[in-house]
Each structure stands twice: as C-alpha cells, then as structure tokens.
Image (cartoon, rainbow, N blue to C red):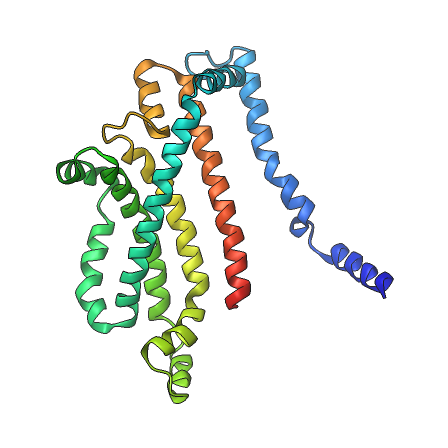
Length: 269
C-alpha cells in the first residue's frame, strides 16, 4: 500500500507543471534577488556607479553593523513593527464593522458609501497636519494614520463581497429559518471569507506603506525616521538599509498572514 501511495505521489509530481512544483517556486523566488544583488555588486565594484549614489553591499552591511552595535537597529525595527501591527489591527477591525454595515444594509450603503469613497481618495500625507493638530505628535497620531491606510483595503474588499453574495444562498438560508446574525454567521460570512483574507493582506501591505508617512510626524525612532534622517545626513547606505529592512519585514508579516489564511480557509471552505 505504501509503495502504491509513493508511486502515485511520484506520478502526480511528474504531471505537475514545471512552475507549479514546490522546489521550483522556492528556488525561483531567489532568482531575481540574486541577480539584483550580483548586478549591484558589479556596478559598485567596477565603478560604473559612484559610491555616493549607490554604496556597495559591503557598505550597507557595515552600516547595519554600526546600528546593531549601538543597539539602534533593533529599536527602529521594534518600534516600526509595533506601529504597523497596532494600526493594522485597529484599522482592520473598524473596516470590518463598516463593511458589514454597508454590505448588509441598504440604508448603510446609501448613507456611508459615498463619504467613504471620497475619503479613500485623500492622499496619506494630507492627513498628517490634521492628525498633528488633533493628537499632537505622539504615538496616537502615527498609529491612527497607519489605521487609516489599513482601513480602506479591508472595507472595499469585504463590503463589495457582502453586496455580491449569491442571493439564492441567502434565500435558501431564510427558508431554513435563519435570520440576521444566524444568517450572517451561517451563510454570508463563509461566502466572503476569501475576500476578508485578501482584504487583510492588502491592508497589511498598505500599513507598511503608510508607516513611512506616519513616521514623518516628528518621529525620533523607526525605519521611516531612519530613512528621513539618513537623507538629511547624506547616508545613502542607511537609506538602502532601511528600504531592505522594510521589504524584509513586509515579506515576513505577509508570510505570517499567508499561514493564517491557509488555516482560515481550511476551517471555512
């Protein structure tokens, strides 16, 4: 029996398209970064690009070493990560509440949808002066700005999904006596779970984008502050380091959310 199952798995692996094989997807994800790193090393070592424009990978690593030895690097990362997580959680929770009202209620859609569409068009930096005026320059203003960024991807995705739940499924639930909360929990929520997860992943990416704008609000720590402070001091190596760290942290948090997504989809789908 074991030999039969092994043979079946081997046959399935052989039938799988080349780009769908696990080892290909894992190895393929490193191809472009390796090529970029090699090109970066080449143009800096050969002098095609001057160091003041593009420092070498070694210089960036040395800048990271300086910040690690001083203890500032981990503090920058921890503070930025805390701000992103708090803003993401608050923004997502509020967005889920608004999307439920707009997606499930015609009155809610009429009253709230137009103003939310208008607010979604406001650039992130436009909120900065108002948040400073209302909340001064503390953590509240930074987390609020990140929450604003995380709000709209979740709201838009989930509200649209709720509005487009198959009416026949809803009607079938009502014929079985389901009403309001029981109907939502049994029929509508499972139908929009994939959209909820997609909205959360988009919101997390947006939270990292809004982080830099948030840390321009008179911040003294964080990766956004490291970017702006390095620009002022002309430390291009630290600018590149901050960009790399933002990319790595965004990828890491997205990977964690992917694992959550798989667990949720196994539960609901």
